[in-house]
Length: 368
Image (cartoon, rainbow, N blue to C red; front, side):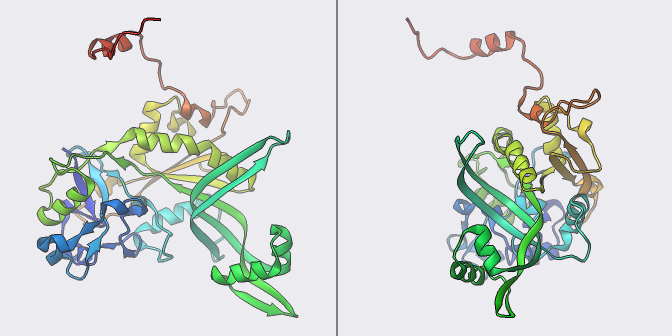
């Protein structure tokens, strides 16, 4: 049965006073802020006012977000990360010491200059229309987890001309967004306007299955029971197909966008998810192990030896970069490309469909 491995950042099987203190504030050590449930679990919020036992453990809150970081589906196996904040968080601007290694690896592969200032934006949504060379209308509707850019000075008049927005609107928008404005020789400047390089960072973690209310395996119920009873609880499983559907639908598109902007897109995943990709598609990631970024880039991290340590709070390490072209580059020794991620790993024998149909009653007869 699946169990919660890490609760509000701390592993349940090595729970200690530090973990208990952290729990009392519903704090996320990876965000350096109160847990937000990963940003997509607001319907799983827990009302402490309905449960005095929970309220006693977290006395200064009325409601908390579900603080499940990872799930262990089988005893002794590496857990699956289910919260994107566990893998990387730049959201609050409070960079966690527990993710220093992840940021270091990102900086190294993106070739960011040490000592230089970069700005990070979270959940950047772009919904627009453009045209092809043949004047065919195309729509674009995607949200980027993080966009990292350089910064530089730029005159507001130049920004106005570049974006085709009136000067007064640019200034008002820049002030509202917290940019630093300065007046020099009668001209208004934005001192920290975004500039090259552009690095798109996508964080892909596993989804959970819906769970069973009667068995208390829904995510919020599992969180409640883990708080009260420690390891004596049940948790939902991993929804592999949902994770896969999200990643396949965006991997190539967002990588191409990064290239079109003269930048790069880096996908952050856990190593067990990278293994799952290799097992379920025609893309064998081990063949794309690299020291440099390419058109498509997947940077994986794992618990490694830390999984066996006695520490209650684990920093992810064991990084590997898998990078390569979207399609075959044309050289004799080249790989087929990351487009293989949408291809079947191995064709199934026809007997498999007969076996499946034999075990399922038909819904009816169709006479043409």
